[in-house]
Length: 220
Image 1 (cartoon, rainbow, N blue to C red):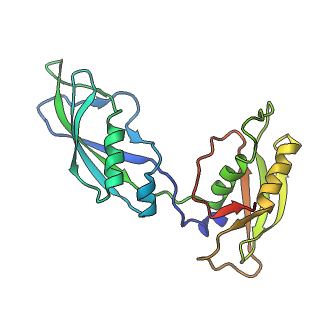
Image 2 (image 1 turned 90 degrees about the vertical axis):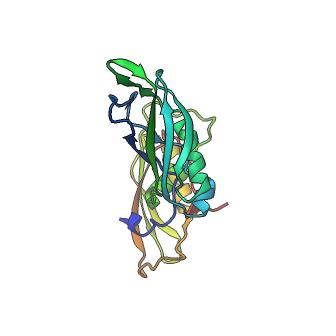
């Protein structure tokens, strides 16, 4: 709905990893556990530079399945992304390569692909408004999401905010309404119709909110 209009700011994102072997005569190593990804926050310097790219890493996998001697085989073109790739790879663990059933140390490479993931306005509002609840305030037992409807005007004002499904806690519902009603949307590069556009958001009070560079900001 509204997300198609507000998809231009960048979020921290996971980096997907594609791995390839360099020693075909060996039974290749395998990730120990789920396929490896880099789930660290997108490097701030890369966010500011709007940088994306693929970092190719070269390293060795020991007989214990640890990663050592990590180097950049091919740069992504951004130092911050390359540095983050090195840091991420250091935590990977493998089932080691084997030869004749015996674990052996082996060279290996992996591509770490960094891409921005555009957030929706709803995700941005949900994260920011969920943080309006004081961290010291315990979450009521059995509380659910607060679902709100609203409208964004061409000048970025949020109007017609209403609770369409209660969280089960009136204080949280009212907190959500205050947050949305006092917020504004950055419409500087948008063209909205005169009547504005409708929106909907589910505020998950249990989420661990990730800080954004917001296009939605509650007023002081």
